[in-house]
Image 1 (cartoon, rainbow, N blue to C red):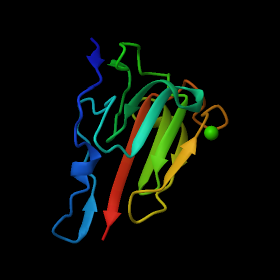
Image 2: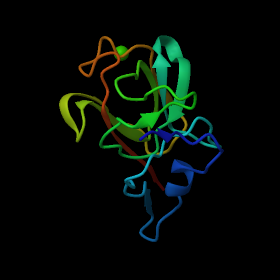
Image 3: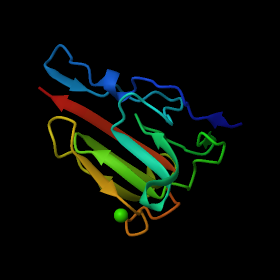
Length: 145
Ligand SMILES: [Ca+2]
């Protein structure tokens, strides 16, 4: 069974960054369903099918414990196919080699209190997770105000 990544514009993480009562907004705990989107009004983490931000892309808005069964907007399998990544500094992202957050892992740590600055990784081939090997994902974004 294949689940198509959403292509409609969705608030995504933007909504999750809404100010909480405690004064610190945090991304909602990820749901179990697919959260990737090809387009989003605001996207803080983009995964790309090819190096140098080429090919298909999808917005990562939460944890995905198993990319198997997910597809890029064009229908290609999303498992073992991430090749480049952009990460807002207000987010922490971890890419794992295997499902259920196991195997080799690469981490982009959260280094900013507010979104706006973006780290761009042109190729995952020199990261521990490796090129075309990502099978699960953790994404955490927060705005400290
Ligand atoms: Ca890299």
